[in-house]
Length: 359
Image 1 (tube, rainbow, N blue to C red):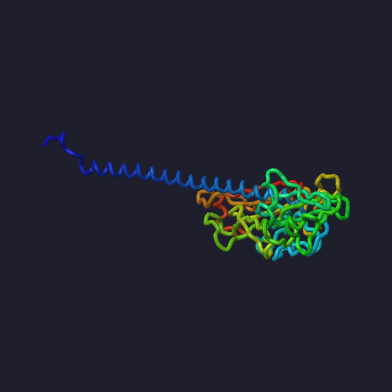
Image 2 (tube, rainbow, N blue to C red; image 1 turned 120 degrees about the vertical axis):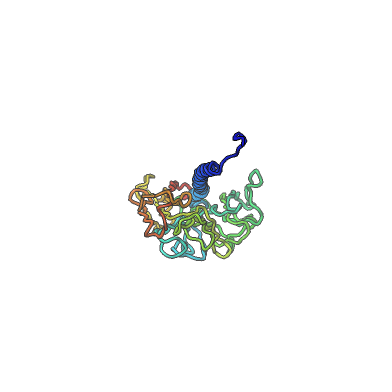
């Protein structure tokens, strides 16, 4: 037999198969490792994008606190249907531009987190609440129209009208009412019969107003359904909830997934020199004027998960401080029911917002 024409022996074939198996196993392991890393990095990037978008909405609404609020002339106001942390203002008192509950227990929010309520005409999600106009003085009063026309009110937009007055007068920013309703633009066509230019603020596109402003609440809760599977058990979602004028319930919108804690700190000026000199976590005892005069800055700290479960990663910090200096709280993952917290990456988002619209 010519050996040059002979094929591979069985032993040679087995050796090749074994070598090929080792190469394939190594390549597969490398592929799985690369895929796992890619998934983890993708989830981290997804979390960061959510954080940028969701927290920007919170930052914008914080900056709007107090915008368009009446300081006097209030009539009966119903505000939110539920009031778990006593954040509704008394029916005939001016609304507080910002209110909050510290380290809550019970109610809709995750135990131990803070709850924030922002009141302004422009914190809802409709087109009407982003508009405002002047109402010219005199018997033939009418709104001063803008260009482009899209900036003007629609015929059914519900609005409030304020008499500006002066900052020191007892009737400053007084609410002008029409019967029992805050009503719509058309009903104010002849309301300014004196020589004062008034201001119209849009509130809602088509519903008679429950209150002469809008309200947006921010809080962390565990939803009854729809919690992302990648989130550690015991975390919740950060929500923005807008109070509806029709009925007083809330329509909520998730802003950020996998949140373990939210802490809010207020910086106040108690000496009247314009420089914050006091830190406080609870302003529930402050009335609307105190808040306008004293609260200059709000700081929000949010502890949230980055990415997803990673058995090869160990987070070693526990407890972690959520807050600023001596304020906020030390958050213990284990005692707050966060399961397998060591195998998740955690990040603290910090928002620092100066309140420019309270005055």
